[in-house]
Length: 482
Image (cartoon, rainbow, N blue to C red; front, side, top):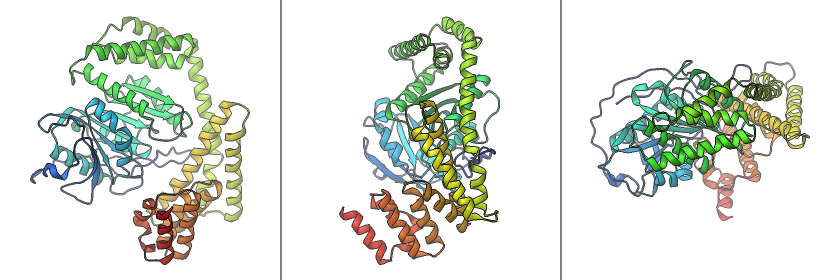
């Protein structure tokens, strides 16, 4: 049994624009497991989602789904999910029908979260516990995550090659900071919304894996920064299933392979018809890499080679890079000011705050009202990137107990959007500072802005100091009565 050692992992921070890096140390340690596996009664029934406490450390846990066909004597494939907020039930609930469809165990960590200092502990806990409890297929173990959780999923695979993670399914983010810079054999599926601020990063990772000849598939879809819609996750599971058949980890299913090959060929034909060189690259790359040894790929290989030498693809890649540069340019006009404001190392913080609020407001207006769809999309991504930059800077300062800096960041982000999240984070920060009166006002504002589920607030351990306050109890009671 291997242990996976991970440290702080959140959004990836490019030096020019300031996004927190995922950091991973390549450390492995042997673990002797002496306790007896827990009884099956500790687990949810098949086809039901339940929360499981890890046997060796009950402070760690995960949400679990076993398919209705679950048989403890059979080896099962598994996907480990990592949500940036530690909500392991979220992806398990969203994708449970796919676990049923493909015959997988799903396990979502309820402790691994962005900016946590104990991510190694959380990743190891769910890994060890599931290996104790279940007979797992050692060739079909996968990791998946969203945003900072996608980086944890990648870190899990890259840091522990002996663990045998066969593929990563990354939603809304690219690599962890520490990753191979040459060819690797890890299958990597990236799903990203076309309005996601991390879209440029995913496109750059696609280029990197294409240049290195590393296996990958990228699926962009209409959407924001989010766990991918179910049909996109379905595509990801089809892909990892196909790759398992190709590697002989799973018995080939001729009908399935034929269906996948026909779909990919149809994608290639449609892309050629539309003269979409990047879509052609995706389709022909898949036809060559994913079906070698399963189908005749000579024709696809010939077309891929011609495409890679074509002026059309070169022009498309250049245009894509210009779009990426435009977004980064918009963000980089604001992010250095955000960092200066957070650090408090300017003479006039009030003037700088006004300047940042106005700049972000202009960016938001461009996202809504620019004449061209392309300009609106670029501005929307840039606005999202800057906004999350401010939030994540505040979260990091909070974890470092720099509460005044965190307060500045969250209050600034509260001013530039109507989202309830900054108000909730302000409540947590001011509670930590001992300012209960203002923290309660922040909570009330978060509710006015849209938080409807009282469990979101009542389960927040950072608000523990407020729970005996009459105003807090009145707020929760009022939410429950609505």
